[in-house]
Image 1 (cartoon, rainbow, N blue to C red):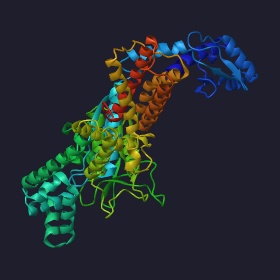
Image 2 (cartoon, rainbow, N blue to C red):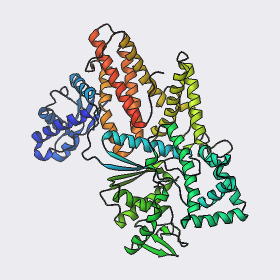
Image 3 (cartoon, protein in one colour):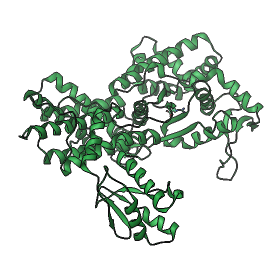
Image 4 (tube, helix red, strand yellow):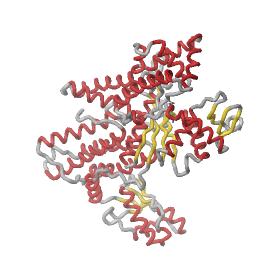
Length: 578
Ligand code: ARG
């Protein structure tokens, strides 16, 4: 809850207690932002029902009992019994001063520092990372950054797809093209091309397909030579992932890799334990869990297959082992799975099965942070014109190149090397921000021009706001203007900006609790708009009064700090100038 709401709630609740009795001490004062004042207290209607009296009389009683001294002017009663509240400007100024001195920028210290396991990115080895993986990577990384800023301890888990039947085919293909060949190098630059080539040879049938099938078996039986080549495939793919992560400025490292294969030696025990506990049963030769509450079309219980009739384990088995590891070994208080919406049923079944097995205790929260699709202009999943899935690296390079034309036009005066850096920050920032600013479970249309626009809810708009404040600061410094310790808050535009600033900490906390980075985007967008309103109304450098000038400069710089911190929680860089 934002600082003003917290302060007002306390005062109103003690008024309720003294006016109506102690049993009213925790009634909700229903404080809401209002278009007629700063806030409204809408409690009178509800209390009137409880007390069997008229709302306006209740409102008058509240008014008589409430002491908002220091925080707000005396409220006015409006309509059926609303209380319109205008905060005292001095109070806002004082709060803004505290904010400026607070390294946490108003972010509440959590009651309990949680250990949060975040499963995100999770591309598949020897396959292209597609735009879907881009989105899980960017959203997951932002959630990780946000939770760390709040003071939780985050364990990143990159559950890459590095095991399973395709590896027979991939190993045989690598052997066929030669481990040191140019084709093998493709794994680092265009893994999908490697995968497609392997697939084509496989689909042609014959000898190769037979060898590929045998290879799966030898690999799974632990054959040293097969494992060596498998390791090489994984190594080359990792290099590819890290090129993408570096380009994106994502915090994932090798230490966060915990691919499907890391659970191999636990799958047998997972099955054995579930069977021994009566949670899993054999059905049509396969070992299955039938988690409570999941039925198919014909009302038959839906199985989560954990050991196929041929003895092989699957995706679900690995995820059950992963839950056990994350809770039992990593000590998770919460687990967030940032994965495409299509896997919703899988995760709901895995969570329920894990709860039934006692591996996911009630006090540990598990959430599937559902990720929607990225669509092309035709409203279908984004693909190239030829229909192939889009190469992620090519997409990012295009974004940076387009940003380069924007900055070349905006700032031809800047040295080339600087424009290169700025174009990178803008291009990558724009793509990431577009992923983040849409609710994570909604689809959105990939439109580079819109993402790169300098107006609207985009990264460049926010980056430009930061650059503008930095430019003001540079000029101020050159003119010997020093910001005052506390921001000035007097006129309406300053008040509106300061009130926005006070909302930062609570917004960050809400984003960390609900895993919703788009709320932070919406917040930063309104903050930047409030800054524009302030800057239009309150000149800084042109102001002749020294105190005004310094106080406004401090308000502008606090805005910069909050914008930069918010963008950092999203994983977006703010360039020094634009
Ligand atoms: N590799 C999977 C995919 O590309 C995502 C894995 C998500 N994480 C998990 N624990 N299942 O669809």
